Length: 471
Image (tube, rainbow, N blue to C red; front, side, top):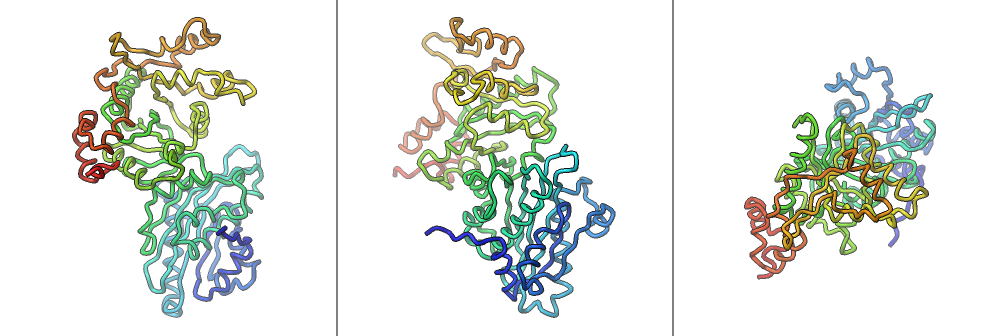
């Protein structure tokens, strides 16, 4: 049955007419557009206890305390706002109406386009709310990027998504996928993206926030989502800020000796290339949505098993809806990153060099390469080992001289935009992850030879990737 999409006004009115929902609105940076919808819908006195916009930074610090980072459009500031506003509304009104009221605090802190349009609009939006009277509150936090080229349009968009969030918190909290989809009700995807969503609380702790991140990508609400090494969903802009980033694409089902060798040897190559700062360098294991949806539907358990295994081994994980490497480079170009190194195998590089993949571009492969090889981006090529000839197939051997792109390719190698990983271990190159996964599912114990002992132990202890199902 298709979900009915209510207008923004009907959603606001529906909340206004529920006499047990009562709280405050604190909006900074884009007017008071969310509160405005509740006022214009009618019956707002049944919902709105207070509205506030503390635009002046000194007033903001006075109300919510200074931020440790000094940033006013941040998750930290949003949490300060939510906690302060919720504490105030529940303490002031708790004795009077706490027994029959579910209190809430809605907040956002946003920057929209400035007059000169030299910045990018984005913001943090959140809700702290009770689902049961006199119970502890739940919290939902999300980060959005504003895509419209007009500040007034961005304000309107923020108002709509704010109403959608409040409505979803009360009507879709028990259906996470519907919750996510409803956030863009009455909004087009070219107006706003949601690239981080996090929930927790007494009625929301059943939700795995990593799955929320994947659903954002699956529902085309953002291009990619990223998890840190502890499995926490983060905003890419914050996590990648001024970092050196080494990206390795794969299916990691499971990560094998070969996978670890790719990571280790790519780090070694990076250390040789430039001064190395461990604290300022991130490795990111990227899984494409296409890889996760190979059977048509998202296997949530299988996805979480991959992420758990990578996190256990100290890896950050990114899930993207990006097929081509030049698109991946374009995606990273939106963030303030020091250097990008994309790691790929020699066989994958062959495909990257095939012009037919770029026929839909006006500039063809030249346009794609212009997007791929930005100033701070290089490709690290992990070689393929040919056992029969006892030799490595490296980047220099991927293209033959009679290829029409030969001179362009040689230029890229000469300029070190394409670099070989030279210290790869040939002993790890004979088996791929998919073959190891097949062995696990079949009960073939040979799979244990191709993964580190601690990975094997984790697979056996937790029954990952179908281990033990053959019995």
